[in-house]
Image (cartoon, rainbow, N blue to C red; front, side, top):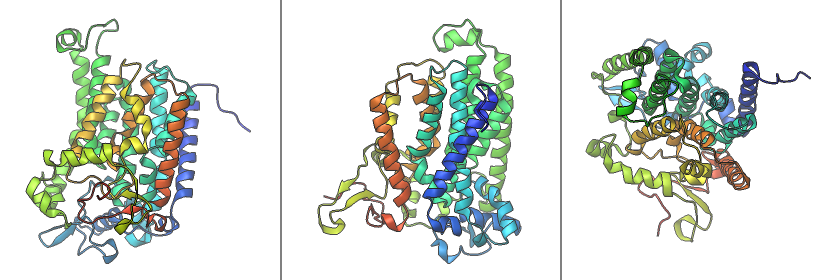
Length: 444
């Protein structure tokens, strides 16, 4: 049996492929049979791909009945898919070959992509290790990549296949590739292209730009620079030519993709800055009209779900005595308690600051968004910045001792539970679904 090379790029590529193969096999094993055999009920991206193939930006009529009119936009008597378009673009060849969106098992397609994110994260962690940014072993790189795959809400998200979760699979995969390339800021154009594509799947990922910008600034300083990271100490010694060239190449693909997006918005909704979310035919449309899509008004609720939402045992009455999870999902520290290690790093050397600022910047838009991510097993919007948090965990220098291993095992178990039950008959008695979205915790 052939052996892995002892070291080098080929070994890393083979290990990355092994992680992709392993995680994909597990995701397929955990998948619902219906997801593998047929299209999901919310195959918006396949419907959009079909519309493009017929030369239309709108769907050509109302959405199919099986989609339950869930998250489509109606404008000027026409129906649109408002979500960023990249996942639909990926489905165009499959829909063209199959002949109809209903003939494409969209969930299976995105399941086959789900293993890209942990594999790319492994490559990013190995880059950190190889450049002396993390005193870790190769085994640690594999461990952290697999913990992301199975010990975070990415696990249950990968199993769904429907429109909202497919966007997370594509966006998170591109975010992990961007993380790999942006570190050390060696390939500005490729970093910008990956970030632009990630944004074309999940808009908040545009705010991951600080990682590349700060890495570029660090690389543009003299090798012997040891001063504090303040404008007064950095600007006089910064290689402005290197920064200018790097930023130009980085922003070029981002500007191109944003321009295409603005043109698409104008063609659909008559306004380049209108993405169509205002025209969603949803029950909570009134709150969007009153407060907007983004507002400080939503912050308290979103923080509550992200940080404090817990399971409970019913005390009789409407919900019985069974184990229950609210439809807004569980708190991040419940589904991924390893994140607590990020709060107390032992090492804060570069790129710790860049990773922390990037994670915070990507998180902010969703914390101000009108929706908590409902329906979900755990806080799914954290998928947008999970790879940056796991990279922070890796560079933080804390030992992966017995306690860490215990909570990591718990995380894998609880996320496996979510992957097996959310959106399935097995979870029918577990999840409390309250249509107005006003119930966040166990009722009194």
